[in-house]
Length: 215
Image (cartoon, rainbow, N blue to C red):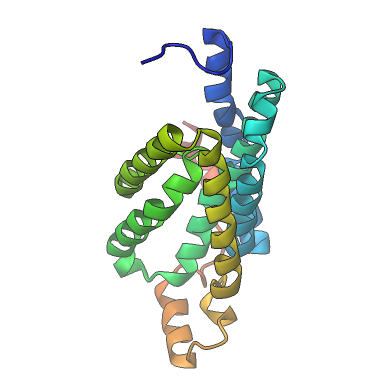
């Protein structure tokens, strides 16, 4: 087993490359939720994932030029990915009845990460959802096999291609809210409206100015 890699990067440079994603990711969490409320979770979540996937194709190319470009690229990916999960929760709050959220969120997150952890682990992915463990196992397995038999670059190429295919399906099949779905019945639409938080007014100002929030 070799102890040297393809690139002669110092430990500090490697740390910057590995941590570059977090710089952008932390900066856009709040922005993602605000944009999703204004423009819809479907497009914010979909575009952020699609753009991040497209940028993933460039990483192997930039790695051969300068490590600083990789850090910048990962920071940009992090900025897009930072908007994605808040946008997903905004959209999910309009579709999932309050009394079913615990069960359905567990199911969705487990299934979503199964496919998309492989897509995002190298694009990369945040690690705070319990259901992502299945996806983590799959991503590590497939990416390791790709690195061994084909080359590490193809982890980015293939995962980006899968993510772009996902983006097409997301665009065609997903809708922001029940009222936007062309085939949902009026009865179901009303049921979802009054069993979610979509009809409630915004309490953002009262939350931000509350004493527990400030403390």
